[in-house]
Image 1 (cartoon, helix red, strand yellow):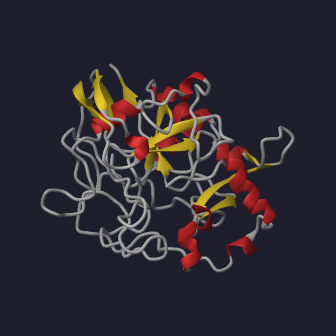
Image 2 (cartoon, rainbow, N blue to C red; image 1 turned 180 degrees about the vertical axis):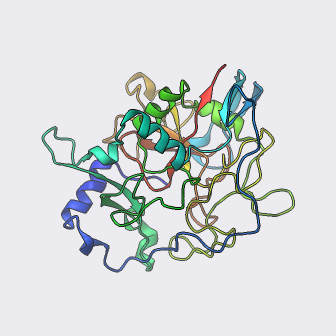
Length: 330
């Protein structure tokens, strides 16, 4: 689901007082339903590339023509082989990076409240806070709120923590945060083509009809039945790997790619907007492709739990349902 740009979300919070009062009346899903009977955690991998699997290169059908307009037109694409993290980067892994470097995320440093260079900077991030009325379905502004104090350490805002969630995907990371981690590892973020190729064979359910990805069940955005065991993020690798040996490339959290976003694969907007452009976010000039869908994708709203699915996201705004994984070419 597409979010408004950072400045708009922050402005909404500021206009409402940027305090607890503007959350009055919202309903929140439990962090986690009772766990299904499954073992979480990836399998052992190559010693020289711990936590990664080799994705053999090849040609594939990139994009789709029969679903959402932004997924087309489809074409044949070829990717060279690459190593890819088996799972999304976890809170524990990101904490190791922060401890080693002293890095502070954009949400911790502060997001600017407007395009004006002298506009106020507020530390925080976008949090999913659904309202339980019919009006909520009309705009995603009704279920996303800019929460001062929300960041990767405090995913639901002040008073929340990642205690007990070491193996959950790190969230509230902006593009530059994900890129900083990748560079620290000597890796990179995947391109859209690399991610889509790696995600082939994944989906919401497997051939036997069992849940194969952490997505939304029930009526979005007011009621999540969490029949897959999770109402929020799940620990990584709780769901079966796809044919490439990768977990959660569909569902759990959207994932950053390093590809600029345009509303069609054949768009000519790159000539004037090399950093990406989304017509639904005309004030943004720095938009990247997100892939994979998230725990908020549902059959009655998002339906982005497919390899070809894609949305554009301002590189300057992390949220409660955006994470990432990295790749290495050797």
